[in-house]
Length: 454
Image 1 (cartoon, rainbow, N blue to C red):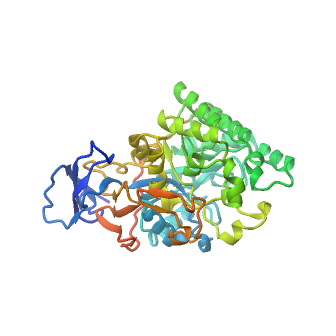
Image 2: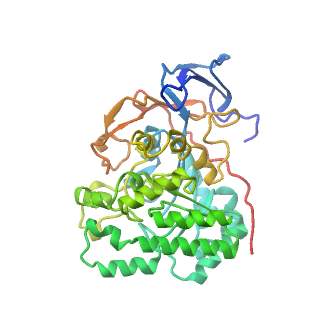
Image 3: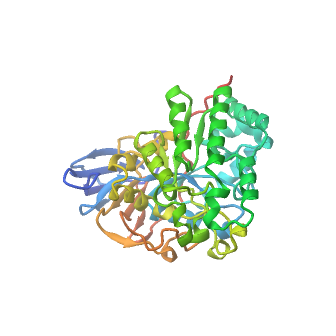
């Protein structure tokens, strides 16, 4: 798409209020032209564009969820892009980065192109499709690099995929990604320690999930991954970080200048293993949700910039599957539908300042995966906008959320900040409590691959 081609619609939002809401907030207006922000200020001329009167609602950029599983193609009965992208809009999310962890995997250029075409015909939000980093995909990495934000590597097994256990194999995978010029996004749990945890707790229930999938398993895997970056020249992003100790390893590596970043998820910040007796298998996710001390450590990592982003790891399963016996219940929970209300809850509880909370799901999130044009109310950025009322609250009711799973680990929680109006590249996508657009999401713009090797 050239600079002269339209990326979307034209629209002007008037009478909005700047973020953060409160005594220092001011009038803010934005004009979007052909999908791109053309003007931002206290008073903007619509220049003939349709006008949305915000009525004093707070205006922020559309959110980027850096980690979702919509399980489509292959397992559409669990979510699918139709439901998943509707849920994203409900949560204020206008861009997602999606991991395919069920067949067909993206291990070739042909498979990745087919997946992108499949998604574009269904998604209501802009999207990036991660390629899978496996021994079979190594010959195809250079060809896939221009089409994907990153290569996803499972160091520990999780829903749908087994983990890599051989260090030499891992080193070659990291080196191959470096040569192709794309970062690795990693599920960091040590496979051998996961197997040992399962053996040590043969009769485990959800109450012991954080022991079966232990702190040590994540920490050792993060340590190994950082060392592989040092050895190969690769770039690493650790997905869904769940431990304070893992965050400290990332913090130390970044101070050394190692190319490593990370993200966490709302459930690691607002829940803990102490909620397991109440929630049972609804709390079963991989990596496991750890202690309240780990939650505090992860909040601190967001506050000091060690942790770049909050991504949901939206991983829905039907409730009847989650209600099986612990050993047979799949891991994962839905929450893309709630990303902004859950992020705003961190501000309401005084855990994060308003600026850090917003950046963690907008500009900082986009930059962590090198996604240009997303995450800011600035001229030249995509016209992705969210209007919300910071004071209006309602209780979470999983059955009313767009996600196909129809349950939530946050059921009954009183949250604020539910988006009232969402714009995707200048086109109304959500309003009046419902989806207002058909499919029309575009593949995310990507920076050129940057090959590097040692």
